Image (cartoon, rainbow, N blue to C red; front, side):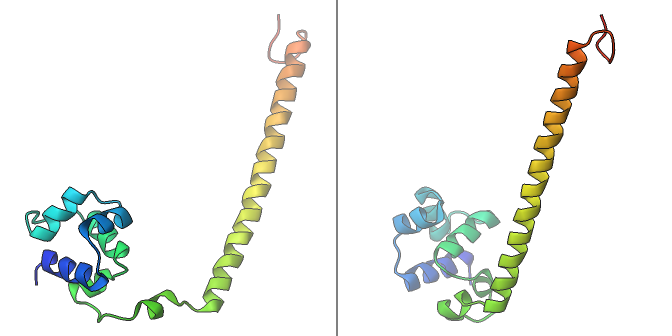
Length: 128
């Protein structure tokens, strides 16, 4: 089955108009019209991906790799995995904050050294 036909079926299944699909996906209406009418033989992967994701579909489903699964089933994830990712994000955010503070301190120290060097022309790098 052609890509345009599969996208049309998915769009009809979700009961969306081309304009609604454009608003949800960020793909221009003209591009959607050309793809769905079959005028575009080889649309970009990103365009097709944006359209499918806006229709809450699956690329696997689109190309026939996997059967259609309910949207609720795809959206529910293991709470333990979610908690693990949240912990990882918190840990990384703390390290980013620490690195930012270290960079600020290092910058202030360097500015202080340069200021001291400029104020004491007899010693240091900037001599008169």
